[in-house]
Length: 336
Image 1 (cartoon, rainbow, N blue to C red):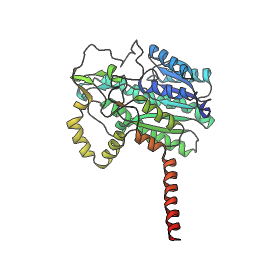
Image 2 (cartoon, helix red, strand yellow):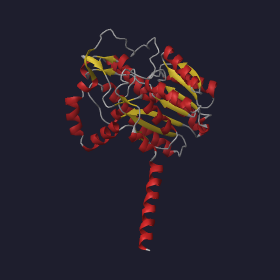
Image 3 (tube, rainbow, N blue to C red):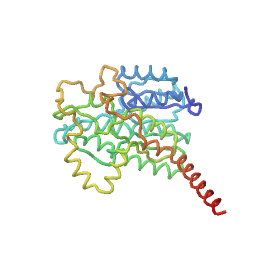
Image 4 (spheres, rainbow, N blue to C red):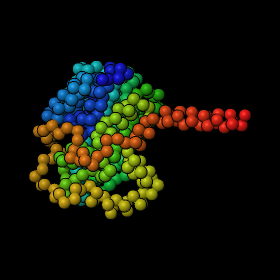
């Protein structure tokens, strides 16, 4: 089942118990990797371990809260003791608060930032402590279109992804300054069908949902796996990511106007009032295995043509060049 090119890889995935992290762990497992699964939910980690092993990978479970740098460092130590030197570290763990900023309490904003932003910072720190002396390894930052364009109701998440992008750029400069062979890449994602909308803290009239068009988490997982093995600086996934990023660069005033009119309704399920007693995982993990998918399977795309094209630029260029060469040859033969 696996590709021999990746058979000996040791990969750490944070937020591996559900959503994108769960799908990423499965994707690496398909290629025979040894995957250290880092998350808080023991039930989710048990499910992820089972799936990784069923797909031909090796799984090692590490319950940890990435907001704690000491726990992250201990996770890195445990991963290397169990599996060997880390080749790839994927910073994916996140949490958020769906609410107007004025309704978010300081401790809620702090917690979302500590997990989503600082969790990636601590993961990068622990990965670099091991990769820099070996002069090899790859760190993948799971970003978002929202790292470029903030949207309403997600100030904590957007702020964290913007911060992560700035951090990413700074550390890449430092790696280049020392001519390090350690590579860092950032994968920017669209709205995804993950369980986060079932358990994130929300203070909206209706139940939260991803901004359409929605993609399956496997689309993100394939992109993360590809980015981990290419030397691309950033990888955009999905046409919505592309037009969000470039639209904001070209006309930020229009993006702000448009989102002020559509951004509230597009992130809430019509006619489904928010259940005030629904479980929330901002501070404590849920005692259940949620898997990778949310409730939007019937709306979610399982492929991204744009991502495929971005990942096959070289092959497409070669085909185009060959086609152009054939045309020129044909024209010359006609002249003769």
